[in-house]
Length: 71
Ligand SMILES: [Zn+2]
Image (cartoon, rainbow, N blue to C red; front, side, top):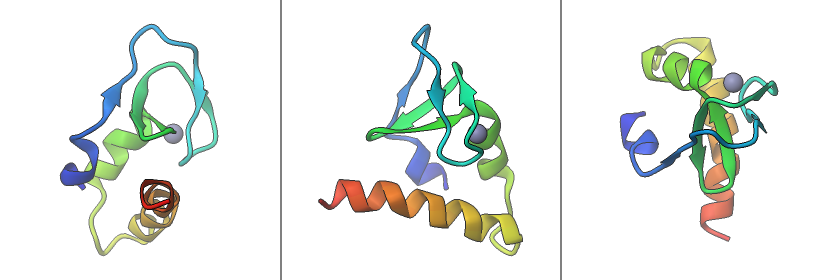
């Protein structure tokens, strides 16, 4: 997952955005292409094991970003 998170823009003092993972509006987090991930979800993703059920959910959400990247 670190490979995914590296080439991103970290938001600072910007307007809150809606996290694509938890759906909550947060001011702190990272932005990948045009999708925002809050810092709580970012931290959780980094520590989620591949065998964890949540991992599949994260991957599913992240696919929305890949679709945009390849558009
Ligand atoms: Zn979140």
